[in-house]
Amino acid sequence: MAENPFIDYPNAAAVPSALVGPSSSLDGLRILVTGLGVTGFPAAVHLGERGADVIVVDGDDQADVSEKAQILEVFDVDIRRGGEHVTTLPNEPLDLVVTSPGWRPDHPLLLAAAEAGVPVIGEVELAWRIRGTNDAKWLAITGTNGKTTTTTMLESMLLAHGLKAKACGNIGAPLLEAVLEPGLEVLAIELSSFQLHWQYSLSADSAAVLNIAPDHLDWHGSADAYEADKARIYHQTKTACIYNVADEVTLHMVEDADVVAGAKAIGFTTGIPRPGELGVVEDMLVDRAFIPQRYSSAAELASLDDVAAATGAPGREPAAHQVSNALAAAALARSIGVPGQAISEGLKNHSLGAHRMVTVADNSGVRWIDDSKATNTHAANASLGSFESIVWIAGGLPKGADFTSLFAEHGHRLRALVLIGTDDSAFREAIAATVPDLEVIRIEPALAVDSGVPQRRGEAVVAAAVEAAAGVAHSGDAVLLAPAAASMDQFLNYNTRGELFTQAVHAHLGS
Image (cartoon, rainbow, N blue to C red; front, side, top):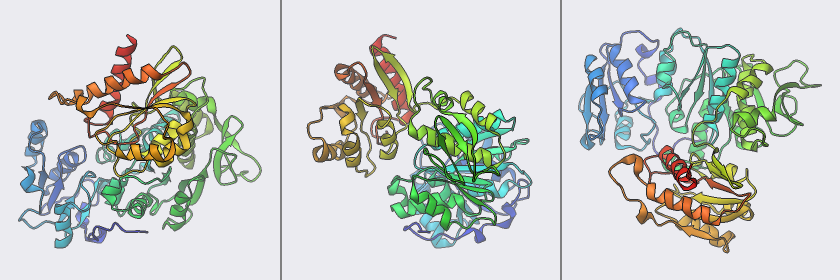
């Protein structure tokens, strides 16, 4: 497995043994927590509650954290905010650093920890160690795209079977809180590559890697390091390693994984499955992996109509990537004995998450689609492949991406491109090399006036993009917001971008 090129950190053997279990005393340990966000805050509370001497550092000294501060004061947590506190380690000796996933491995403070021999872990490692006697099954999911949809599909399937289950990790409840919640039987856990980078001991019951495409290379340092961190999810898997038959990288990850004896490699495919795989026969999702007669027959799990309903497209043929997501979720559910009836019922009960291929409006034959969550080329590729004629709204923070393959593969589908984002050079280069005659409507970034209200940042840009798209769209077209880029150049986040798009569409249509 490739290592992150930034630096080698002290491994899990150096983590204080007292951390194991949810209630053992941490008295005498000094632990540094980086960040006061959704990861750092619950970590600081838990560690402080168990008696550790906790220091929290956060470079942001402007946000209102008064409510969090009041809670942390109860446990004598030392909060240090401001840029001067995140450049190096505190002067006090440290036993452990618990870092938030937003902090890159080459962050000066984390590099200082490595140099000082202080072990660094993340929330996944912490949650795994403190779970104690909690015997809830861990079903873990990662991949470049589709993680959230697959995780919520899985949760819905588990609930349909009557299990006490919760979606958590990178979505829903923080993993640290979910693992301590009494009564839960199964955790459906979405894990990002950032979270996986800092874990060493995880031994999931079953794990899935949905797909792999270059992403977050600025954080990981290289494509090999990104893949290596994703592959950590398979480490010591107990029951099933779920991989994508169409993505050879995921199979190699399974082949290279050090798993518990008896763990099986289970593939999923949108084609006809072989023994040991889940796939599609005619209009049915079927299982040829978790049944005794898998060499001679298949067990029906759900229909493609169920997948369409689960992804907000009832009555339509579901997109191929959504079928893949459903199959991956079904494989994880089947690995712990969930029957086909619950797979089908779970899909019927499922609601697609916000800003993930959501139909905002269907007016005069034009469908308006919000896929603001498509923040990279891999996600945008799946979106573009779902429609025949598209007015594409794209652009944003490119993160070093090359968009040539998108235009080469989908140029024939594009009626026009409405280009947003402060830097359009990568898009312009790709267009010139592939579809130079494509109509491009540039929305000038100067329209993005920061009004002082973060939720309104970029509002003028989105409104102008919607008006431009409406001017060129014909009946039968999809106006698709699938930016293929991050949002932070003009928006607070991808949620804000999607919300502003939805508002602008309704305002344009007068609905």
